[in-house]
Amino acid sequence: MYKRYLSVYKKHYPAKRLAPLLALIVALSPFAIDTYLPAIPTMAQFFQVNIQLVELSIPLYLIGFALGQIIGGPISDNYGRKWIGIFGLSLFFSTSFLITFTDNVTQLWVLRFVQAFGGGFGLVICSAIVRDLYDGKDAAKIFTLIGFIMMIAPLIAPAIGSIFLYYFNWQAIFSLLAIYAFLQIIIIFFFIPDTKKLRKVAGYPHLNLLQVLRNYKRIIA
Image 1 (cartoon, rainbow, N blue to C red):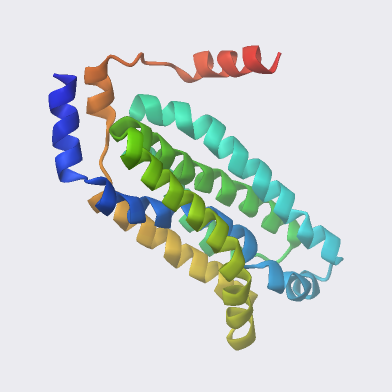
Image 2: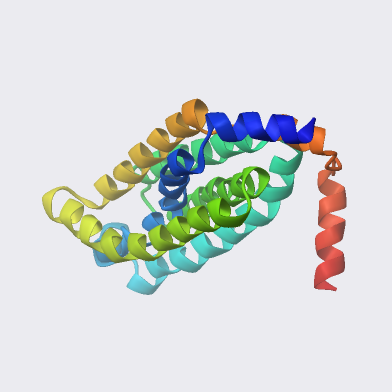
């Protein structure tokens, strides 16, 4: 039965069609890290703080991004890739929008952390979907494309951020990220499969969050 379900999924979601969509989702988080780098001095002036305090939002973003992947992966195993991805990107969208209204650096720190947490959900479901559906050459092709996008995004993101900063303001950069996240939500909703049923047929165990945290504790210890 599992092979029959898998063949149906692959027929409706061939690797060559799914790969660019997943790559677009994966690009969001590295894009979000680097687009606002040119705006950091301007943001420091806006918040009337030292540049170092605005720069602190970068490691906070990376921590939130890592936690989003650690927590989002096991949750998506239980509740489905699609809806966890939509939840994470909705979180990213809403916080990106709220950042445009921040008036102090503390708000920026909190919102960037939450933004990254949602972005981590979006990234982890992409690699999970590839593992659910593909193996061999198809999986290698998709992961290669995802890796390529992960390299390209940080190269072009600062240039895009500089353009938006020059013609608009630093808030416009985060408006762009909000629009990007919203488009990704649409992509996931309409074009990305939910492999929950496939995993159930395959006999994967259902893990609760407490059990997952215990496993992480055991690994760290």
